[in-house]
Image 1 (cartoon, rainbow, N blue to C red):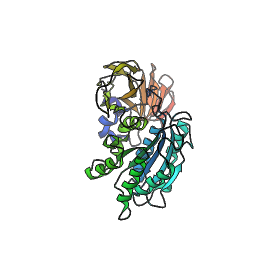
Image 2 (cartoon, rainbow, N blue to C red; image 1 turned 90 degrees about the horizontal axis):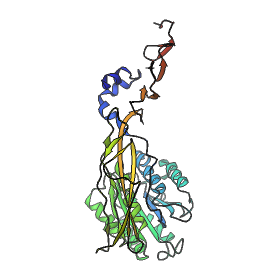
Image 3 (spheres, rainbow, N blue to C red; image 1 turned 90 degrees about the vertical axis):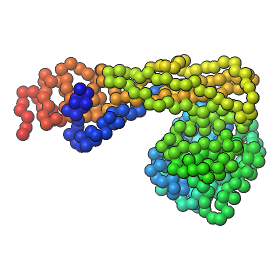
Image 4 (cartoon, rainbow, N blue to C red; image 1 turned 180 degrees about the vertical axis):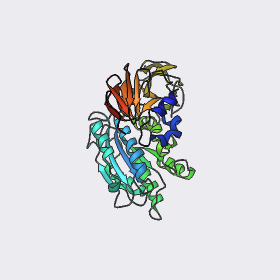
Amino acid sequence: MFRSYFVLTLCIYGVLAALEDFDEWQYDVGSPSINNGGGDSKCRKDLLLIVDTSFSIGENDFNNNVKKFLKNLVTDSRLNVGPDGTRVGLILFSSVVKTVIKLRIGQIQDAQQLGNYMKSLQWSQVSGGHTRTDKGLDLAKGIFTQESPLNYRRNVDDVIVLLTDGEPRGRGDTLQLTKQNAQDLKNRKITLVAAAVGRKSEERQFQEILKELATSSDYFLNAKFNEMDSILGTLVAKSCIKPGSCVCGEITSQPFYVQPGNTKAMARWPKPTFKCATGGKVALQSIVVSPSVTSPHAFAPGEHVISYTYNLRGGVKVSCPVKIIIKGLLCRGKPFHDSRQICCCGTIHDVSSGYACCGPDYYDTSTQKCCSFANLIPKNESCPY
């Protein structure tokens, strides 16, 4: 019944060609939930992002995945960007001439402004040839010249996040220089988190290189371009703790679907766990879940973050996020509830008795009529031929 109704009310400009994809097209992620809680927001670091913009990244992945990830990272409440929280700097690296400090640490101290800056980066202005990771790390050495935390803010720990899609390349000793520069930074007690992204993220040789660059293999992450947000919670956690502390990875659910006629879908998820790099047992004092829900629970379409905060003896807190994905009926990308709303050729209207769709319009059938599927005229007039 629903499919028949869908076909009858399709727009007349090309939507029929996409009918074969209807089963997948009708379900998608809805608008984000207003609940984007990030748990404990006591992260306070001097954070330097070193981001690969070599040609292998590509304009499409840079615009659609890398920039989105950077924006989501710096606006994540768990990272706690702000004057009294985490302050962020940005180095972009590729060829020698395109490897530059784009933002000094703390140059932009408002999270939303910083997120907008990440969105504004233009591929044509930042892209370059080789992957001169050594040059990016060398610039970092000029920023973090002393041991952590004696650099930008002398009582705040220093962290580097290296984001790259390939092995260091450029000249014969590029890899050797990269490893040496990374070691120099680690010798200064800088925490170095390395993330392999893109098509090569699962290549063993590439992973082993980045694990060697990172503070330890526990500070290595990997994800394909279109899955970068899956490492967001873990990257935030690893950026906000000292090596040897306790960390918790982010759990992302499989999609749950709202059935036609319903407004919510029931979701189930496992209780997250954490581990401490130092090993041994820890004393758990309490667990705080925000929002206060338990599995299973019904959610509206969108992405919902449930934060588990484990309070450990000694004042240590470990935040474990669970992301629940609910997909529902969409009308040109926007979710709607078919029990009280109707989609007219990409436009959502509230259901009213005696009304019908005419193209994107929703009209009163007692006073108007629809001609040629999209042309509204007074009811007492004749449709033009």
